[in-house]
Length: 270
Length: 296
Image 1 (tube, chains in turn yellow, green):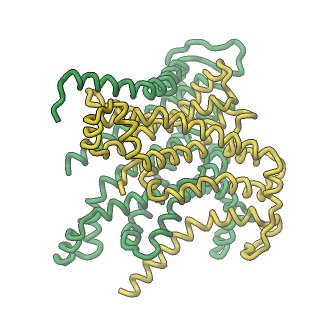
Image 2: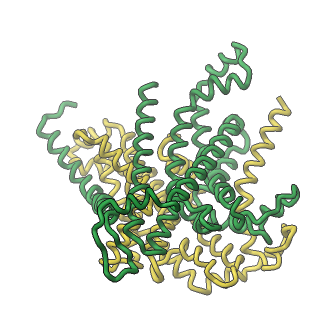
């Protein structure tokens, strides 16, 4: 039994290293001097320098982070405002075609972004919504709204019937039962859904690359443009990447349990 | 509780009102653009051409069938799907038992599994571009020990494989998490009964574990296929579709046509093609889940 446990331990340890080492490499690179970053064999012990952060945060990058914050927060607020009542309705209503509608909404989530970005680009071109943060907020609804409706419907399904009936007896309307009973009951799930939607909005790349030009560019698209410079500034790229991914990592560590359920599309109910 | 019909009807109406804003938004932001996409695919329309657009019917679709670059992109996409999905499922199947039996360190493992999935896909691409770098990359330093140091992304023979490995790093955790949960759902009694009957490890895997996790395995495979078709950020930042067109999937080719060449009519045709491909896979996924739900 002992050698088997040891083998499993070694295998799992290798797996953890495989997933964490690339991240570790990126983050440490952002704290190394150029010479250290390019040394072979790699430098494992070094005195961290903040030059790259000073350089990145002194330039235009904070503005792009600001765009990311604004666009992601705006799109999540809109998504939750539209999606929460819709999910509750889908969990409670009994009209025919409800299942088909639900599948249609899920199907929307699967669409290739390019297939939507192309017509949206042509329409935005005419409406003057290109390179506009509001334009991005609206288009982010196409992937977040279906996700939130789908996941929240699962949460609202779990609200006990008796709880809502009791509210009804106390004189609550349907809307009252939704606002005063169902929403507080599922509050942790709603919050977690919002975090997941926020991560998807924060990470978004394809739509933003196509629909933003200069002023509305978000952090992820700005990162890609670091390569347009004549000499690739690896240290700056590493620092900007670290800045961009740290809020996502922070939030995922906080909501780890739920995120596994959300990321796997509700397939896993823990 | 008994409800009268009138109350029920009124309630359904309230539910429809709660649904309406979200549905109208999806119609405006998804359905209308999709219709416009289909319409655009019937036009000869180049953004660089000042004479504007002309209705050409199915000409773009004929062009697509005869377009060698399109078929090359299909080949790349097919190899990407096959390589990426089979590697992820293989790793998942090999490790599922070890991970499911893990007691100590399970929290650390789950955290390390979740990180590649949640960081921006573009950063995943960047990380691997740095790792693959021929002069400074860690990948080449480590592979150098076994004499495999190489400029992975620049060589047309290895570029696609190298990009596939970025996808494997990002999404194997997804496969692992689902398979582990599916495996944990198998009652201990079944495995114990198999042991009593003298089943070997391999027989247990082949005749007990595999049939029981097969529904999840197939679901995961289809979900991952859809994701690979939509893949963009990682290819964009590692190779941009190159060298040549060796890593240019249909998605990347559509981007090049529409937003680099401004040939939006033809790009829309490819957009319709991708939409249909994903739609068929999604319908297949739903059928699959229904089939398995009925079988239970």
